[in-house]
View 1 (spheres, rainbow, N blue to C red):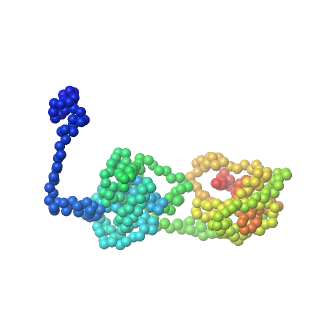
View 2 (cartoon, rainbow, N blue to C red):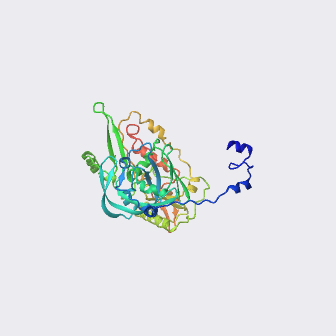
View 3 (tube, rainbow, N blue to C red):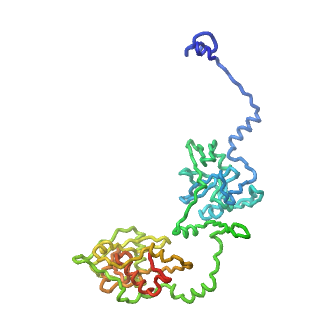
Length: 436
């Protein structure tokens, strides 16, 4: 064939090859394949019933229950109604599984099923009595749907097994790169598993929120004589009782932790003053525009402060706008925009301690305790001659503060000077005063 190609001859005769010459060698061919009728029926039945494959008894791998993350585990993040789902794609599990607590938290429609035994890879068995039919979730903005058996999972929210994998057709799976590719409805999908080498660090401010969502904690304690052993903790465990000594201390100073029922006393040297520069006109800013729910929040906050006596109705020439600000615990706080007033205020020169300097004072200390003062600014009164300068407007009225509000330029200095005076005998001995 190589010699004929070099000479430009046809493969089938000694004539020179041309495209027109190739037509002379074309022959009509008919190929027949005889198939028994029974085999044909089985083939058609397999094609039509592929979605109803019987996988036998449900089977799940150990790492899906214990949380052991191996080298080849494929973990991705999906979503259900914009809520994140931690998903384990596990070829070692036959069916799809959803954590019982997650299903209840998501509000899924749980149906009771005939009790079924599930076999774990280590030989143990579990009972399944509930299922979520046609559970839908999203992976990279693509919607998927499947039935989910409900069991308690230790490492993730959901396990996708062979029952889901067979619906994807041909899959290109790179376990080294934790990359998975498949085509569904003519659309190419690429999933990338999360790396197991990284460590996620949670800041102290987010730790409380994380614990409220429910996490599983583990720690290793090493003893010189007995050797190491593993302890497992969970945030869903029952809270331990308060020690008797602590309970007695809290009962003795019960009045300290009660909500204040009266205004703070007058302190001539520490009442907050608002000295203004010369030729400064009274601040008069119109209220901001608010949506309906914000107006309801402002009205409630104003009414609460009127009940406490923190504010009173005003007829002052001053007026600053207000803004409702959401707090981390879900509550709201009324903040007054005092920027215009602060521009004309004489700045106080009281020294505010730096956090780094305060940390240096803790050198060598072994025991620590902390007291968080509730609404500390509201425990300082405004000087009677300056009350009218704190006036603010809302959509429903004109009010002024009797106690020191947040947002005034010299408020931190006033508060720090009062705390230093109260704890003067104990400062730098066993008491430090700071505010965030």
